[in-house]
Length: 141
View 1 (cartoon, rainbow, N blue to C red):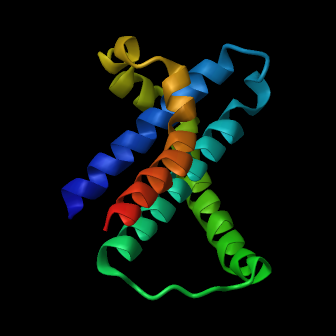
View 2 (view 1 turned 120 degrees about the horizontal axis):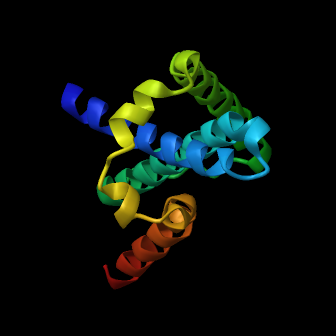
């Protein structure tokens, strides 16, 4: 369990690092950190939502038809809490201008293999692609 947590944090650290470096090179230099934290938080939310959807479909859990405003009451505080913890987590790296992340990921072979646009569209692929695939499986069963 601890190894999975470490691997996921390395994954999100890499996403943050690549996003920060690419945004810092553009006109968004002033808010590169905030946008990178937003991308990581969005990706974490999508992964949690898709995981919940897969668990619901796999184990045939009951579905509650809640009003959209009630869903927002539960989702928005969760998003702000995740954003807060991500902000605290990545601020500790900012003390030395993200040198820890640079030394960990600067020479990574993934930098040459994975273009940034793939990292950027990953949440959208998860958001729309996984539910589509699950709906195909649901029709065949």
